[in-house]
Length: 554
Image: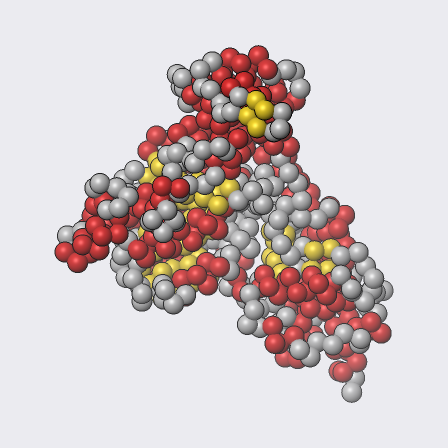
């Protein structure tokens, strides 16, 4: 787990056995079947009434406790300007205005913008977009932003607003692809967060006859729990095979595990990069292995969720090395403190394995008839419809395709977040700040445990995995650790941590981690709270040790 830098086994312990004995953990095993997210929610309720009367420190969920301010203020400025523009065409004091006119809107906005922080940002962001995207019609661009912020029209095109797609292409280029130039070769589909993106992808792989029930899919474990649960649903009934990474390998896949992906019987590979809960990006050396994989298994579909990418200095997407085989999912939620906004995006290369397999499937008469029957009501040539466009149609059950697409307001919010990054050459100051925030908390937590933190560049520090069994061994020896394993349910520790100390962490077993591991989020507490959380963990370990010593004397 790490190098112990302070050994407190011989120091005075804060174990309060009177409180420890008040906790009834006899029914904890009944929670085994619940999702770890549901268990953490239950434990958080217990923590509110903890026996020590402590202030609750909930390090279980990954929702950040910060927000990006400037982009939000800029959005509000667009909205304010949009209302003024609408009142130019029609105004009624009872609260109604007309619609926005495109002609001259760029110049009117520039005149309206003053020298406030939000106005300066909005002016700079728009000018940066015009320059970087080589936008010729400034009125059309600003009209899309203003009209989109007002949201008085259905999103059109349904998959993505015209200029938003260009902004997102450039954002993904900077953040995910890095030095591999792909922006001009990709399509994007904004979705209701990364969660909706994953739902749509699984659905479409099924509808497009790319994945069949019984097919083998490999999951890079430990991983976000739903990616282990969704493939097992009855409508998909996929055979899941996990490749589990280990701490001693810095949570990187081994050569042998990459070899498993070369087996043509493996139809898909799911990864979170950087990982959740182990918080590691693929190293450049490991990333390069995917080129070998898709060369050996050209029909492999890779789905990668890269929401934590900006938190690792060395991160690059799998998409950058295997673009024709990879479906990239990105979300603005964690970096910009926007989980409630639901801002995700699917990205696919123009020449991708899914489109190729669809065309191969159309050689089958039955599949061709099914395809035509399904999509002929929305496009004149359904057989030419791309996978990503089918995803848009199927996201609205085909019949509602004409009203498909993420709300234009959400897409414009994406524009503002993306442009807050693109306006700066090199590393965005905001991204740098976000890394510093989680790094400070990460160090506070691990130093609180008395263990040197991991400083590898692949480490996002957004989450961290704590091996409680290893901590027990380091602190009080192997016999004590074995005693705990033999006598307690694996959820007992997190249950007692909540009910006695008011401290909440998430059991990592459901992520695919070994029993005894818990996930701590470094995103949702104040820095000082992580020292409290670490101390609560140590105190509880010491209390269990007191029980062990007492029973050992009998």
